[in-house]
Image (cartoon, rainbow, N blue to C red; front, side):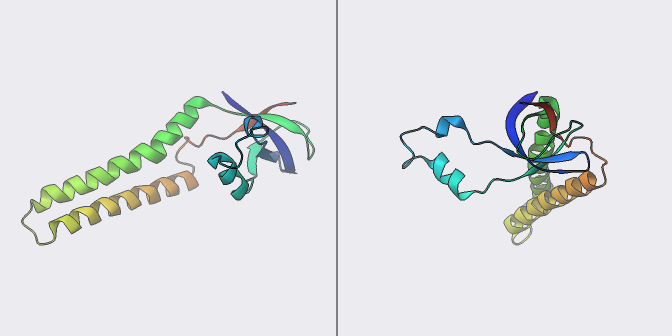
Length: 145
C-alpha cells in the first residue's frame, strides 16, 4: 500500500474529501527562490480528493490515506500503455494498407494513428463510466493520525 498524510476538508455520504499536506522537505529548504518544485507548488492550487471512509471523522482531522500498488499499476498500464499501443497500431495498419502508393500517405498514417489514439481514450472513458473496468484505484482512509 502506498500511504500519504492528508487533512479532511469535508464529509459527504461515507466519503471524506481530503487534501494532501505539503512536503516537509520543501518547507525549510534554503533554495526556494531557484526551486522549480516550490514554484510549481505555489502556482497549482491544492485539490480535494474524495476518499472512501467508514470512520467517524470531522473537518481538520489528519488521516493516513492509502492506495493499493497493484491497482495503481494496472490503472497506469491501462491509461498509458493501451493508448500508446493503439496509436502505433492505427498508424501501422494505415501504413500497411496504403503501402506508399497513395497521395499524402504520411498524412493519412498520422491521422489514422491520432484517430485510433483518441478512439481508445474515448472507449476507456466510457468503460470506466459504465463501471465495466475494475481498474479504478480508489484510495481509502487507513487510520486517523
